Amino acid sequence: MNTRESSTRIDGAEGRPRRTTPDGVSRDAERFLDHLAVERGLSDNTLLAYRKDLRRYATFLARRGIRRSDDVDESAIRSFVASISASTYGDERPYAPTSVGRALSAVRSFHRFLLREGVTTRDPAAGVARPKLPRALPHPLTVDEVRAILEMPEADSVGGLRDRAWLELLYASGLRVSELTALDVDDVDLEANAVRVLGKGGKEREVPIGRHANDAVGAYLSRSRPELASPRSRAALFLNTRGGRLTRQSVGRLLEGYARRTGIRRRVTPHDLRHSFATHLLDGGADVRVVQELLGHVSVATTQIYTLVTREHLRAVYYTSHPRARRAGTLKER
Image (cartoon, rainbow, N blue to C red; front, side, top):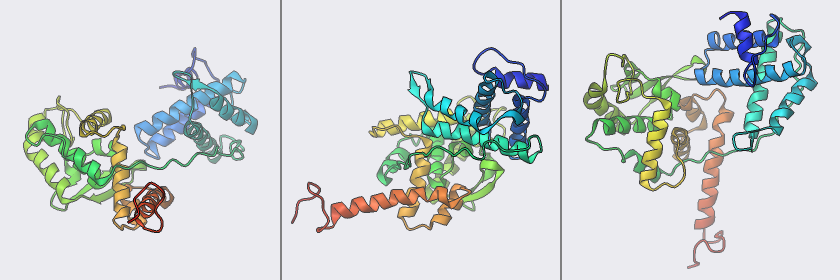
């Protein structure tokens, strides 16, 4: 793709295509996206999010008459953030603070890159503070809820064996759903009870898996995958009915169906199993830094949010169980 085509794609996201000059914001954005893809090895989904945010940013600047990255100032970036905060999408729904923060994060990374590469002489985003985000605690499933979901797939069908295998593996390892669907057969070592995972940023980690997950994956490999495999399967571990690699969307849809059949009323996603994995480990006494490594978090601060969940659980148990701390209406006094 040449520079002129790249520039048109960036600027043409929210209206008619706009041509930018060869030294425009759009060309710089394409250079930055290439850097993220090639040198940092970000996933397709992350790159798509960056592209969407930078496309919107370039369009916003073009409408203000700003075509060169070196012409951007702090007020323009503040106005961009304000425009997202004030806009709506879909059925007149406002953008969540997390969406606003993600867009600003993309812009900040973009301008840091330009300064580092010598494309610009200053970083206009340096002084723009991130919006304060409400702390959103994970909502893990209970151990009984997880057990009910894991036992839902049929044990004697091709699809049931496959679904039991990936469900057990998700909960046993805390994988992201993108990591699960990217697994190849050789990534699972049943003798060592472990799975090799390529996480965010191309960082590889090895995660142990328990007996139940090991047995379920072994049963799938010996009895189900051969039935699903086709020439297009290649090395993919989990296959769909056409022999292709199972997708994130399919995993999410199947999990939601199994959860609904168990009687769980709220929506359950693959990430809820990851939340449950972390929370149940900490409840069981695992060190937070061990959980950090298992989850593939770069910073322990990301993992520590799960300690808040377990702390809330401990408080709830305390206030409903201790005879001198019970709140009115929780338990009858003996």
